[in-house]
Each structure stands twice: as C-alpha cells, then as structure tokens.
Image 1 (cartoon, helix red, strand yellow):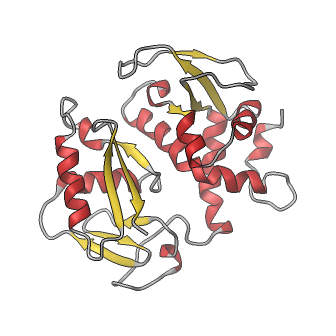
Image 2 (cartoon, rainbow, N blue to C red):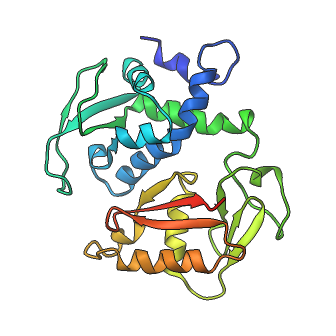
Length: 241
C-alpha cells in the first residue's frame, strides 16, 4: 500500500503515477464527497449514505479502479444486508483489500479518502481551468469559471449554464432554490438526495416533482433537464445537448 499522505501531495503532478487515475476519479469525486457531506449534515452514520458501486461504474469507473481505492485505504466496501429502503441501512463490511464485489456492494470514503478527494476537487482547476463553475456577470458572457459543462447557481436568484443565464427568480421559490443549492454545494454531481425530504420526510415526492417541473419549464433557453429519481428519494440533472 502506498503512503496515504503521499497520495495527497500533488495528485496531478506529472510522473507520479496518479495523473491518469486522478482524471478518472474526478468523474466520481462529487458523488463520493456529496454522500459524506449529507451524512455529516444530517448527523447520520456514513453508511446510511453509502453509494452503490453500480452508480460509480455507470459514471465510468471499473472494478480495477475500485480495487485500487480499497488497496490504498481510500474507501470501505460493504455488502448491504438489510431490506432496501429501511433505515438504518445494514452492511457486512468487506476486509481490505477487496478484489471482488458481490451484488449490493456499496462504498463510503475513509478519512484518508475524504482528504484525497477533497484535494482532487481543489486541484481540478489546475488541470482543467473553470471545471468547477463560477459566477458570470451578464447573459452570454463566458468567464474562465463558467466554461465548464456544469451549471452554476449563485445562491440567491440566478442559474447559469455554459456562460448563459437560464433563469432569474422573480418570485419566492423555496423548493426550487433548495434543489439548486443541494447541487451547487458539492459541485453538481449527477444526482443528490432530495433536500425537500429534510423539511417533510413523509412527502412522497410530490413537492420535488412540482419543483423539478418548474425548473425545467422556466429556463430560457432550456439547456438542462432535471428529474426525480427513486420515487422522490433523489433528484438528478443532465445537459439537454
């Protein structure tokens, strides 16, 4: 196993053997960090927000990537043993290094993994300037921080994508804004846990569905598609083109 501290020193430095891996792991950094942030915010066990490895594989990782994460001590893997949808979730943690992944395998970041992926996110601008998104000053202007293919929500009124102002809220819209803020904080992963459930845990997704419909309809131009996933448990987004 490599010294974990060395993995966090210049993760994108040429010749250190991590540059290619860093490019791959940037695809899932926001997913992994978002799960950890949500667990801490809700004061829940990190395993309650464990990510299914199928989600990581769909984004572009391979089983070999997962083996590397385990061998380096950056993630813990466990097989979910409890009934789906029940809380707290139950897992049988797999001994490291994990080389095979049974059905229902999920993962969480270790403290070392948390530091590593935070470092990746912090250094991504050094590799791809503007990847993390940022504010713009007027419709159509393209600053360095908005060249990336991720939206930007300014936290109050304006939603941008690819340097274009998509929508400016003129009326109170707490549900729509809560969803945008839930995406903005972790850097726009493909999906987030429905933030409206924090306000009304018994809601069956109606509030999210209504908010998502408005987010989709009120863009001009319409460049993003928001969607409700897992019966209202999650909300996703993707570019239309």
